[in-house]
Length: 448
Image (cartoon, rainbow, N blue to C red; front, side):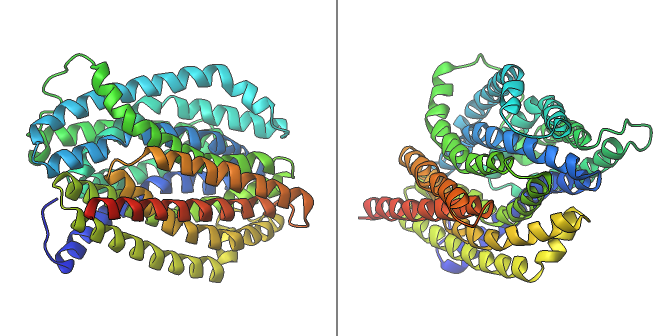
């Protein structure tokens, strides 16, 4: 990151940071994308099992990983304030915190996984796949959390091309592991959907090794000496990071868990409906990586400018990001509308699943447009370290307004399962409006 003075310079710098982040996020989500596609080719029950497993895993992972995202505004603001010497301490303590959180979620999962899955009215074969898919993923939680913490540190310095290179290196390895463990190739056991979890876990371990070696050997990163010493854990530093990270994590959890809740409600329908729902949500979420990447870029850019107390420049970056996200969302909506059946055929050859998937995709067009407003604004607010009010807004928007309205529409109108997708549209739209009002209030206060 560096100081800019004109709109043209800001656009150039924003693009330089954004493009590698976008490729990185697309690459990371492509792992889940290929998990879903390749599991679907193993059968509808395998796809449904991965769908249920993902619906449990994604909100938990993204919520706890959101806590670790506190390192991004911390590092970017320290960089903007020219306090580089304080960065290594925060990163090392963040690594310790990542390990603790990963072990904690593993312990909780050990006791709660069976009770949670037993609550769902699903076929025994689907429950089996879901359980052991999650068990396999669980073996990679520690490296995944450490990797994401270190990646946030690297990105916050503006070195986003490094993360991009690592992900582009690991993606084909993940696909290879999927091929081996889902279909039983090259001497590996044929595990179906469970094999997707094994493949992801192995990929997480590989990614951690690569990022550690990169930070140790890269000249621009080695000077921070992240691994040169290992001080004692500092509860006070953990608390400082948690004060920022916990609201971020819970806000993300409230948003992603509404998708999980919708998937759980889908279990009231047949396996074809569950599989179609997962296919549609998977592809729509793949497109969501664009506004999400813009949000991460905004956290870095806004945090850097706020750290240097250049609040007008922070506001300019905010509008650059939001406008870009909306334009890209319109393009994504057109893509979904035109190629809906082609997208559905990527996930299944079953005619029932294809038809249901195209119906779900129609609703996805509208909720991803709301995400195009909400996600970048969240990135802006994180750059300001303004996270507490957004937590409350997320809870009300998604769980007080969104999901109850979906339940009513699904059970008391002719929409059926599509009523739950209406809840996604309603919740995300309410959240986007609330976040926009908060951003405008914060910018007015800082610039006045």
